[in-house]
Image (cartoon, rainbow, N blue to C red; front, side, top):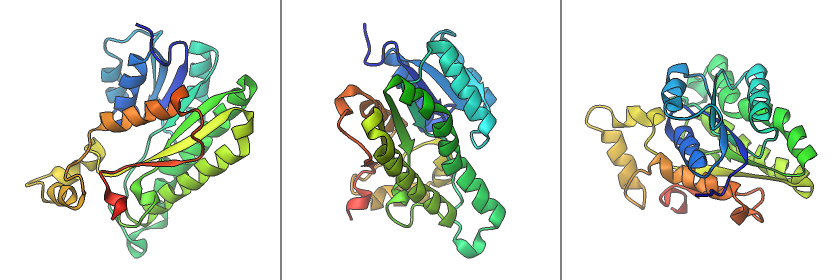
Length: 251
């Protein structure tokens, strides 16, 4: 059965687990050729099981390095000859550290992983998309890009910056066939949030109680939103931030 993304090539970072892993599955289901990027080589190997080389290419590398962005772009062109969608999903938490508890090294690491990684992959893929006359970016922000309390100083700063980067990217290139939007997840049950469920799960229970929907979301729900934003159904949606937070930011 034909899928929405038949014949399209999609790059997804943070692909070995959580939201990125769900995005890989959803885009593959829709017929896309996927380039899955993550520093977790073992997780990528598991992800690869059962998928042909033609459908799924895995790339182990540090998304904060320009060489990884270049390798991902090269792999996408080798597989499909074009790049249609980029999902900048990779990211990391900062243990909710306030400014005085954040070292310059910790600050730089979070900004590199969350923000600079997106800039680097955009820099590599955007010229190709412009030459094609079309291309879509789905960047991963967070409710921490909209309000305080979703992370520490570095994480919150990085997610606010992703929203700004996304809006400016779209404003600069929308007339040339580029669409850029970002997703702002709230409480999503992923390995990145495993600490909240440790022990008696007190923190996870508190988060669910504070969320109007009274639950955590599954990564598949975020992946579904990413697929929608990348699809032709969302062709007139530009430069937006789409919260998927169970109502957290409505309070």
